Image (cartoon, rainbow, N blue to C red; front, top):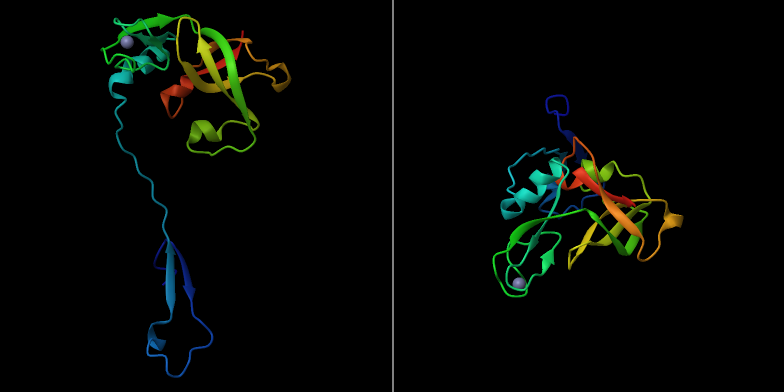
Length: 171
Ligand SMILES: [Zn+2]
C-alpha cells in the first residue's frame, strides 16, 4: 500500500488480541497523514482603503462627523454614536502606550514566521487618533519607554497580508 499512495501511511497492529474479541479482524488500524493546501478569497470589505493606501505609504484612519472621535485602526461606524465615519489621513507618528515582548511566535502566516523572536507587539496612540493601534514595533528592547515617540515605517513587500506593509519604529 505504502508504495501506491503518496500520503504518509502508518499501520498499527496491536500485539495481543483476546480470543473472545469479536472485533479481532478489525483491530488493524491505518492512519494516513494528509497535507492540505488551500487558497481562498477574503474580502477586506469597508477596511479596504486603509490597506490600499498603505501600499502608497499613506496612513489612514476614520473620523466621526458627529462626535469627532478618530479611529486608528479605522472603523466604518463610530462606536460612540453609530454615525458613518469619514476617511482622514494621519502623519503616522505617535506615542508608545504599552507593549509586550514575545519570545514565542505563533507562526500563523509567512509574515509572522519571518519574525525573529523576541519581537515587540506595541500599542500606539497615533497623533490625531483617540484609539490604540496594536502592531509590531521594531526597536531595541533596552530603548523601550512608556510615552516614547514612534512612527509608522513602510515596506514594499511582498507580504502575505497587507497589514505587514507597515510596522512601527522609534522616531
Ligand atoms: Zn461619533
